[in-house]
Length: 221
Image 1 (cartoon, rainbow, N blue to C red):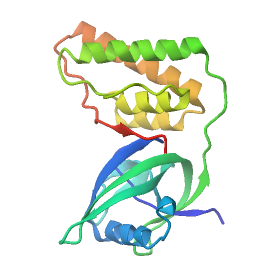
Image 2: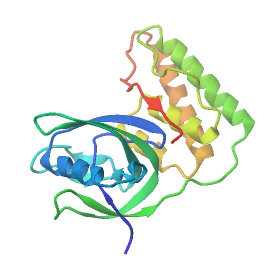
Image 3: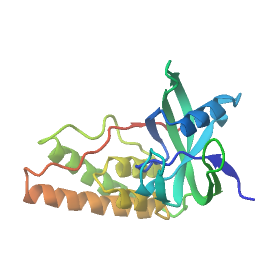
Image 4: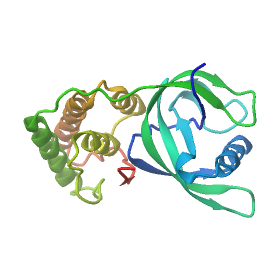
């Protein structure tokens, strides 16, 4: 049997290193939080998240179709409210592939296998290119709205690739493709090309608002 994880499907993609705030109000996900809080060691409070391909995060019908590659996430902060809901913060850790989702219990449970990051080399020139394109994108975006990223970009190539993926203004399918990239070099190539395309669109139509991007906080966990 493959290892299991409590599962929290979302309408967005979580990346390793990404710190994610969530509001938990559905009974099944309240039960998931209660389950995690009963784990004595807080560093072992893991759950999994996969993006919803079709369907919704909430409601009786919920997700109709899920992407298979997701992110294992560690629960780091929990704020309970009198009405039984929670505000939580979680940090993406690493990738997995969902083999089967069991929805017969109090909360969904996924049977998963690890999806480790590839170990291919990353050329210095590729890192310089990626940083330069993102810097140009931030500069162009600052003319029409706020900066999508606060702080200094990570030096580590893998975390740089996750940071740029999180900040890039992309539809869900392309964000998922970045999560599924074979290795860091492939992801950096993909996100650099996507940011270049966005820059070209912004230069052709300077008044065109960029797609909303979430402000994110990052942790090397």
